[in-house]
Image (cartoon, rainbow, N blue to C red; front, side, top):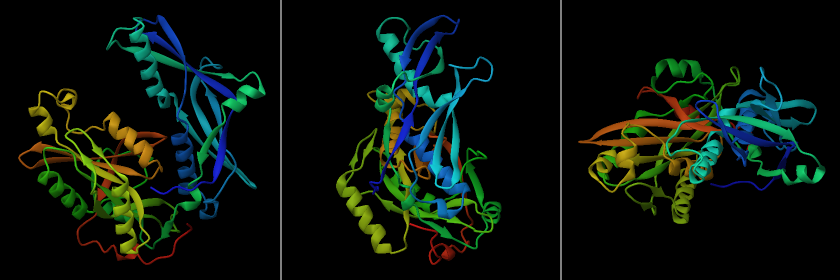
Length: 362
């Protein structure tokens, strides 16, 4: 995906630490949090785009990350943290994040304790997050974080359609969450995904979802509409993973340009050949993923790297055998990749309004 090189920095006045405990309350170790802050910053950008005037969709000074102290025990223990994007002449945009944001850092720290023999493999543990103010300017400087500013590049289409009416006319799928941006996925896209998945049921296949971010100016609520699936060619397709190559992205960009509809890359789809995994004694996935729908660590790493914008989604088609399929959608929520819901509009819905309306920006 294309990115822009405008750089800003997130300033850290604090360093963040985890305390790990056994289930019985015994403390077993501490670990400095080497957090990936960019998803939180990107989510805050997205919140600004969703809830603020379109004119704020542009460059801004550096993001500031601050602790949110625990309401009962107070400093240095955290309830979470906040990210603020200052804006010229305004108070700025602030989003808050729970300590669950550090769950992967806690999992990494626990694996180190397992290696040291302080924690049994598979043993349950608890963790608390703390923050300590940096002692000097040099330490603060080390904690400064550079991140790309993509906000000026996000194009939003103005439409006369009302998202509440569209949702009422659509079939709801997946796991609903009140804070998620509404996403419309036509049945024709799901059908194409099903066909591609059934045709190649012994390995993972995938594609790129393109479409628009839209807003009815009277409602000012942002929503996404998937308009096309571009089959991913030139990939490395294996039984347990799918890898996009530079030739894949060249092919996708050419297809988007050929359509000439100003569509954004909204995300991706890929299949999980679960029936094949269950038959294979060599596949870890066959043992680890008995449930129908999941998003693997490899999936998360790819989504974090390639589909970092907070509006990006991931559609997973699980092949269960005998042409039986299960669809699940994942996306960003508060800087974390989580299962989410989506809407399937009726087949006779006129979506021509999507293509020939003015942009807010970008």
